[in-house]
Amino acid sequence: MKVTVLGTGDAIGTPKVGCSCPRCSYALRQGIQRLRTSFLIEHEDRTILIDTSPDLRQQLLAHGSPHIDAVIWTHGHYDHFMGFGEFYRVQVMPVVYSAPRVLEYCGEIFRFLRFPRHAAEPFCTFDLFGLGLTLVPVNHPPAETYGLVLTYGKVKIAFTSDTNANIPAESLSLFSGADLLFVDALVPPSIHIDKHMNYHDACTLSAALEVKDFRCVHMSHNIPWDLPNIGKDGETFCF
Image 1 (spheres, rainbow, N blue to C red):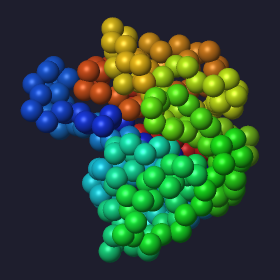
Image 2 (image 1 turned 180 degrees about the horizontal axis):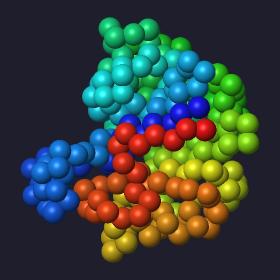
Image 3 (image 1 turned 135 degrees about the horizontal axis):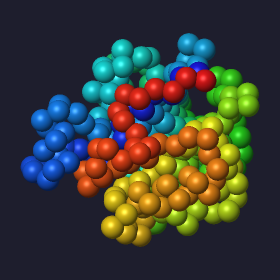
């Protein structure tokens, strides 16, 4: 199984259009980006997307134009599902899994497309191509939002999606001890936003969960490029 980080940016991405801050200026000079956060899971000739970002076309082209067999939506915010339209006239529409109300909301936006839909109940593990997947509630007010736990044999990978640090205890117990955690870290420690974690929150949570490794994702242009454990677009992990 291989996990590829297709993007590590927030809704705006880095560099931010029209911004001349040190982080955006550095990105422009170096030709690097933080595309909107999403992930590609490859397992036994099947491919799964966790979220379909607005940068999906660019992300898939950069990684060999894989055929996507299934999609998982974490919540109904623009930067996490609106790229689904990029499948139109490109491939057979993939099956989508999501929590019932998230699936209903996002599906209504794409009502002009026909695609198979499977409502997945939170905390109920389902099998997808030999992988165990569990949607777990997090805290991203006011949007109903879910993290994800992926298991493959003894391997456990956790994704917080967008959330603040007040994650329900049952969800934390499922994240605990993960081999790899992808964790929301929108802004530097000096900034506090009610519905997201900052970098300090993300590092503190990762330590408390005793995960073996972690990467910060969903980062804004305010996050420096050289902090420990920040995710990078295109980074891969093999299990």
